[in-house]
Image (cartoon, rainbow, N blue to C red; front, side, top):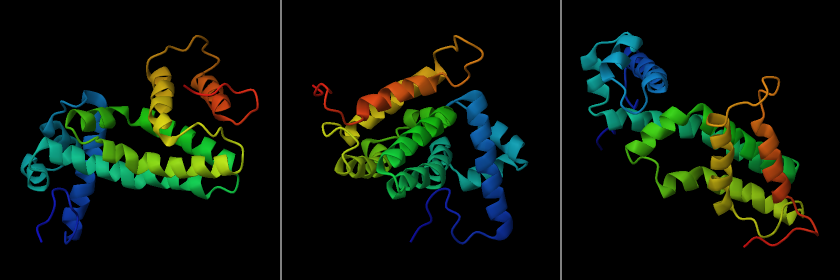
Length: 200
């Protein structure tokens, strides 16, 4: 069975350390330079030779793919799974959505690079929307989330708040987390209530 690009399986300890340094460096360089980041800059920041980077990641896409897989496994899945296991169904859903929004905003450069290399697919998005869907189902079963809401609504809701965080300037320097106001408005629309107009 061949080793996948960026895999740490069967690596020596020093090679594994190099691998982790390269990933950490690449993440920082992507934040600074965007999807067209320089591989040489990654090598310099990681303190390894350019040949070492290419030995682990033959193509730019392989490096972005390894970073994206690490991000999903270590950051996204744990926070959305926590939403499903929360004692309070509504609070679990709220926590899951908020944590996902913060994570997406904080990693927007990486996600853009992944999208530019066609790594973000419908299946990828579904991998972390699905647990939020389970959190929604629990909240609906408890009667605290509106019945006509579905998990397919979450990517758009998340994108709206993230756009506010990244694009809309703060109108008041004393309100550094203004985006939470808009998240609260969206969440209020997600709550169950007798006077709610049915979604089109």
